[in-house]
Amino acid sequence: MDRELAGVFPEESEIPAAFRPAAPTKFRDYLADGEIRIWRGSSLPVLSPISLRRGERLERVRLGSYPALTSRESLRILEAAGRAFGQGRGEWPALSIGRRAAAFEKFLGRIAAKKKEICRTLMWEIAKPYAELEDEFERTVDFLGQVLDAARARERASAKLRRDKGIVGVVRDEPLGVARCLGPYNYPLFETMSLVGPALIMGNTVVVKPPRFGVLFFRHFLEDLRDCFPAGAVNVVFGDGPTVVEPLMKSGRVDILAFIGTSRTANHLMGLHPHKNRLQAVLGLGAKNAAVILADADIEVAVKESLLGALAFNGQRCAALKIFFVHERIAADYLGALKKGVERIRVGMPWMKGVRTTPLADAERVAYLDGLVLDARRRGARILNDKGGAHAGSLFRPTLLYPVNRLMRVFHEEQFGPVLPVVPFGRIEEPLDFLRCSPYGQQLSVFGRDQSGLRPILEAARTQVARINVNAKCQRGPDIFPFTGRKDSAKGDFSRAGILDLVSARSVIAARETARGESLIRSLKP
Ligand code: G3H
Image (cartoon, rainbow, N blue to C red; front, side, top):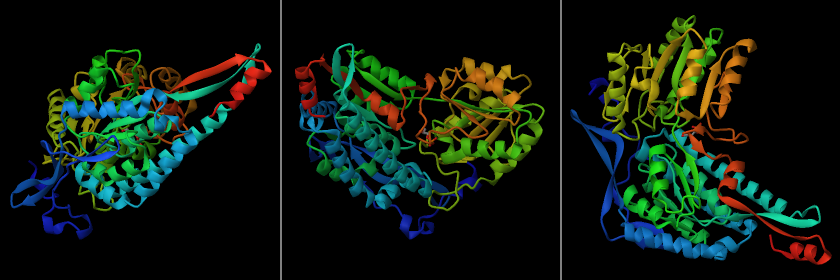
């Protein structure tokens, strides 16, 4: 344990009053079939990744516990969601998109008043800087509002009669059934709700399980979910993943698996489902996004974007930059400036202004990152930044590794943490080979000025990744673009336009183009 870094954790009295943790709560509620039920069985503890200093020791803050539902209870909840769907004739799927959107807007209005408490609970659960949590909250409300608008536009478009070759008809978006929504711990609110919202608005019923970290904040809006949606339309289960998720998949009664996490878990869950072709999989998976810094790159821009891309929320973003290829002609200048930038990154607690490195949400990740750095050093890489590689409790200092090569684990593995591996290259084929051989294919960043230098890499990479960012970091937004990946990085497009397609099915009602046929089709409710 690095003593200096350990000193970054506060003593209890040093925490500003507005951010002190609430007393640990035994959270017993869950939402099933339109009721908030009280769980009397066992529970799972929640420890914050944030520790308090007590003399020489670091002690993780206890936040409370949540219900550890059994597989039996979880299956009952799935049945309730199935009944609420009622083969598409239940109360929720039978509503028009306009009516469903109105229910959703009511929900958004109610949670708007709870922004502070939701962000504060999340801050203690995943240690994301408070300011970034406020952004995540706003982004969630904004995204959901746009999803509702997109769904309404689809409903309007579906009323339009299409005719050709003597046939007249309409094309409708119909729900698929019960959606199992599982979001990730790096964006527990935004990404979970960006699965739940689209699934619901298209008329599916939903069973949500909060991620591994970022669970307790759900308690702030269980009642709102209960009050704004019909019974069984939204259900929230808590518990150990394998216990509450696997039996549901095995039952064959999950119609949509909306999941953001590792491809290993996604494959495992899909493998349990007995009707593979019926299951609609909406998957946001791993990534190892590369930055390629060409010999004529603007170093200042490349360094600024590299830092943002690699270190925002400690690199715990699927779209983070996770490997850097720098042309050997500018390697010294780029590394010199990047080292300075990494050393300037402020390490601290998530309530501090301007802080960038905070405790890792998954405290176990520290040992993993340490192993990656050790492996790279054994194989010839050096840590370039002062104090790089240091760790204490769940804090891991940003670490700049150079020169990295393909024999090192960090060249291949998704670190999901504040480690920047830099690989020197002489020929453009070297980073291109990395892209071609990588199991992932989410995004790429390329830095350079001359179009004749940029063009070949854009041409070669566009069949390898789903988005190429020129002189900019990789990222999900803005939402006018698809957010997807190739190979083992995603299945489906998570943008507002794309995701509505994934959680619904197009169905056609058509008739011979006679007065009677046309009048019947016109008379159908939207
Ligand atoms: O974890 C992956 C996120 O969806 C990427 O979104 O680029 O806004 O961090 P972001």
